[in-house]
Image (cartoon, rainbow, N blue to C red):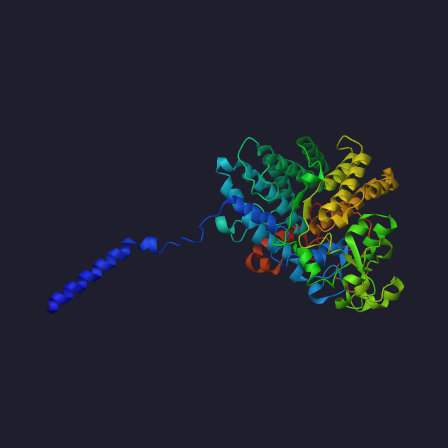
Length: 512
């Protein structure tokens, strides 16, 4: 009996074992989580993340880029310190690095790799290549030499300590990529209307690619003018964005928010102000865009008193915050500037240009026209510099209505401004790039880059007494501490090529 029992038990266990083994793969296969993602979804995510949807990366614009070019500033220090004091704040100087590698490029590079072998995804492949150029330009313009050829390949090739490439080498490859990708876009081949930048339209992506080529080429005006001229000519011949309808824009919604608007309309609402140099420039030149972008809570004595009932958009009543003050010293100049407290200064309008669903522009028709105006002054393109200049101003004024109907600039006001500000030969480059400063408002990375490249607008250095820089302006961001920890040897090689890892370091194309 005992033998029979053992026999039956062994038989049951054996049957159970083989039956479990037979269904082992089926039982242990996760049918919910994906093992691979559609490259279209990856590209869309890379586009969305470029405007800092992680919820914190917009602090790099607020703490550094806007303050360096003296458009938006805060008097407060601690976690908000940066260009307001010309001091290093590692918590905010590394956001673009972290967001671009961990979010934007991780997805965009993966989209490039997944789509390049699929003939049905030819247009997606070339669009992703163009977007990769856009992201890498922001990254290298901010930090200088960066991991490029081996960058963003930790997931797909397990390269966890990528070598740094020189910015010169990077820019030459960026231009090559743009030339190849724009040429490869083909309207006769399939495209996806679910792509969020241009609805998969290869002709619009082509115009965006050539417009990005124009921007990249103009970065080289100081260091490689012949290369710059060559690629400006190629960009113009290829065909540029030719109207505001073709702008590269992120269309935000109540679900996919404008996170800069979220910051300035909520947590940081009482902390950031339009600067005196920016507001005064718009006021002194009777620029109608001031009404579109500025509000002031007249008489506010603290954050809670910045109520809707206090708001004025009257351009004559706007008062920008002076540069060079902290939240204590600013009180010493309040009376002479005409405000009752620091909370009484002019701010960016969170009901027009900074609504949570207001659009965010990556590259615009206005910017193209202003760059063409400069190229015409340099003799690199045909056409009249004044015509390009005027159209660039006109396009940006028309662009205001795309934020909100309340931000609309009337045609009469725009034409009056243009008529009163003709392009003058001896000051042409300054005029053009000062208008570019206004045209790129709220695009922190582009503002910072073009200010260093062109040297305009003419701004007085931030006079804050505790400045940590030796020059007049911050020139780049230091590399994040995480690189020192995980990629030290490659980082040190890059630093040895460029100079100390501080706010004074100039990137390759930014020469004195």
